[in-house]
Image 1: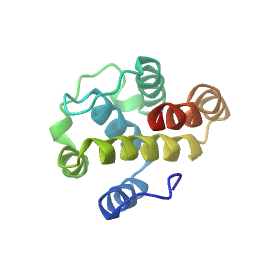
Image 2 (image 1 turned 90 degrees about the vertical axis):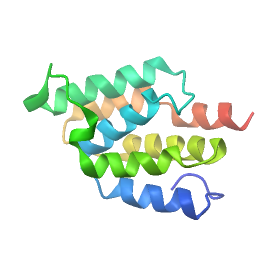
Image 3 (image 1 turned 45 degrees about the horizontal axis):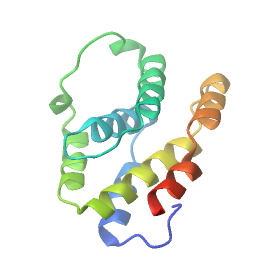
Length: 128
């Protein structure tokens, strides 16, 4: 984990997130960032995650998929809705940190994530 001040609710959420596949992590992260319960205005990050998901999930490329189809992800996402705004932001930072540290078995994707997913800038912005 990146942040040392996370409470039990955030830690449990991230433990569940860590157990997902890379595709599931991307799908859940996109869903949460686009949710009406989340105030996240970094469109470039969402677009990067969508592009990465589209590249990795070739079976569903171009398809519109109802998120409720992914029961495990829906249950995890519901936990995010229950959190206060401070913990929601911490979860977002931790999810994006996890994604930035993931190996996608594709050097091009890994490089693009590394170059464009600027977590430290997001953390600095969040604490100010």
